[in-house]
Amino acid sequence: MRQKEHEAMNRTQGLDFLTAAFYH
Image (cartoon, rainbow, N blue to C red; front, top):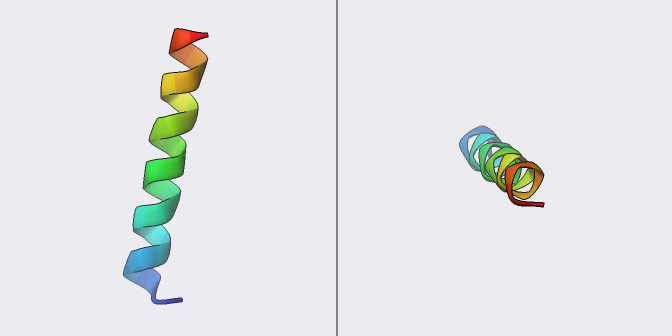
């Protein structure tokens, strides 16, 4: 996996995690 794709995926997963934490 290319570095930029990996970083983008981690960033998206982090945002999803934060969103879930705030809205649950």
